[in-house]
Length: 373
Image (cartoon, rainbow, N blue to C red; front, side, top):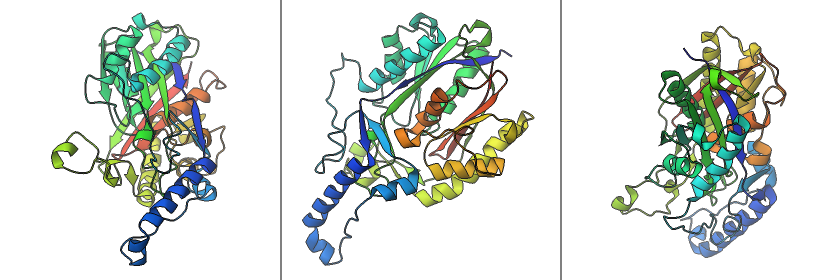
């Protein structure tokens, strides 16, 4: 079988950041407004008062210090608490395609590719801007790429699942050079009015190029030694927004139409699943966790990542073994592990092994084992 390599990565960062202090100020103002508006119901015991958030609570719970967002003013408006995006005509490049093109152009430049070299585009993200035409097709056209494109959604594991599809396409001959893009506009599906999760997500887009090793010209090449995917159904991370809502006559702004999770259950169930998945995948290739030079894990929660590594390696490890980008970017859904790889791989040497791993709603877990060439 053909050896397949990752040869270039790209990262789009939105122009705005929101610190924890700014976020807490906005949320607490919103909570005060709600508590005043519903004071009678709260006094009668018919409604619970909203409790203030705090910087200390956020950082202890997650390790997050700030997040990048496409729109800041709408999120920080206590009377709105969500981004404000201007609608675009169908003739204009969509918002999701715009940030995807920005990340893709960086990845293509790093890989030494032009649009004419790309013959497949996989747009993999937790949420798509629309049902059709596929976002991938719009990105393909904007880049001048050929071949085909399609969208895929496996929540926070979308990127790793897409890498396997890209590698399989190259091995089978259905594509020569595949672009994987992960445009994550998470600010649009985060419930900024919920104290338990209002701090979790940030916006970003990542991209990478997958091609056959024999055609790669980039000096930055990572052979894909193997990939493995797993799903197990769970309701503990869920979002009910969808095209059927209008036919159900339900409130499009209801709480279940945005991100929600049973955080403690997710932590308890996903950590052992992710650790066992990585260990089993390594074992299938005759490798041990200690053989891995670097782990680029899904960036959802600092404590979760630390516990996954402790189960794998048997001890605490620092950023040199498992880089954390949560502090700057927050949880960026499927893009998190790719950001970690993008920013923290240049120092590795030929022969070094790494694991890109994501875990999220589904539950879904994807791992990609790579070797620096």
